[in-house]
Image (cartoon, rainbow, N blue to C red; front, side, top):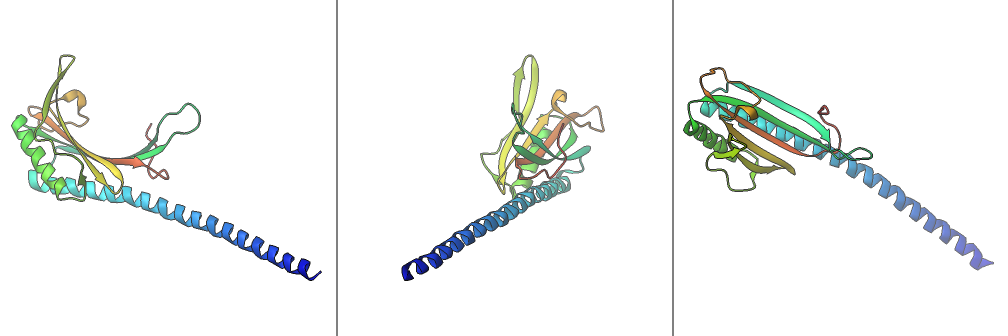
Length: 197
C-alpha cells in the first residue's frame, strides 16, 4: 500500500514538470518570434535610413539630381496553391542629365565612394565603368554592384543613355540620361509596406 501512494505523487510531479516544460517552450517560441519580427522590421527601417543617407551624401558631392523617387513595397512570389513567400524592398531611384559616358562614369565612381563609406557591405569587386551591351540591335549602357546589409541583399545599378530602362526624366532634354537605383530587399516576417501589384 505504501509503495502505491509514493508512485502517485511521483507521476504528478513528472506530469507537472512536463507541463511546465511545454509552457516554457511555447512562451519561448512566442518571445523569439516577437524579437525576430522586430529585428526583421528594424533591418528594413535601417536600410531605408542608410539608402536615404547615401542619396543625400551623393547629392552633396555631385550636385542635386534632376529627379528622385523613393520606393518601399512588399510582394509575394507566385505559387500554384496558397500564398508565396513574402518579401519587401526599399530603395531610391535618381537621375542626372550628363554630357557623355565619361561624365556618367565619373558620377558613378563618386556614388560608389559614397556607398563605400556607408554601412552597406560590399559583396564583390565594384564595377570600374559602365558596360556597353547590344541586345536585339539596342544598346544598353549599364553597371551594377552587390552589397549586404543586416541580412538584406542590396544593389546599386547605373543606367546611362538607355531610355527604355529609365523610369525618371531629366530636366534638360538635350542631356543624356544617367539613372541610379539603390535598393535592399529580402524575406519579410510581416508586411511592412503596401503590396506591389
